[in-house]
Length: 229
Image (cartoon, rainbow, N blue to C red):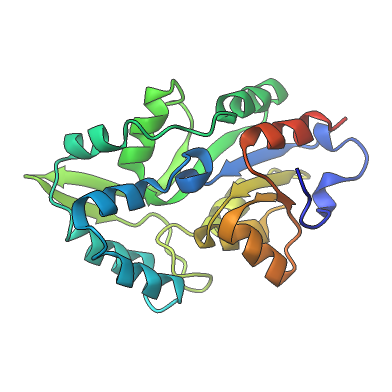
């Protein structure tokens, strides 16, 4: 692993003994692909991309983006579950979950995507007991209905503000470890104590002075955290 910046939370005396909570992004982090993008590519070709670019530029919120994009999706929940089933999880994620359980570190998934595919994929890999904080989607008569979990306009345009999740779960006298890969992880990473980042999140951290460890897979993260005394 190549460190991006030396994170203050990575040093000190006995960091492994600190009360620790771990929060991981899902799309592109735990899952090896952005699952929502796979769905949209399959159902809408490239028609969904312009509103996604507008979201990246900060011109629309997650809710606005999602409602426009999902109007292009005409498939049942089961059809979408079957579509995403072949997408693998990071090969090191199960071992990382094992480390967290061994250390007694609560681990949760935080996503600005939707819970239906996250829960489905985690359950398929025997990890359905992990807490998931995500936007909610249900189907009625073949139509998807969306509920956005934690909007926080004072912070960001997300439907599920990850800064709030970090702040809600920080243990007294302890730390939050945050793992992510995208722009929807930026506010969560900025609020966390120890950050592992790749992709657009790593670029954001580097450009905005957020200390982080660069990583490619969860085996690298497990190696770093296993070395803590």
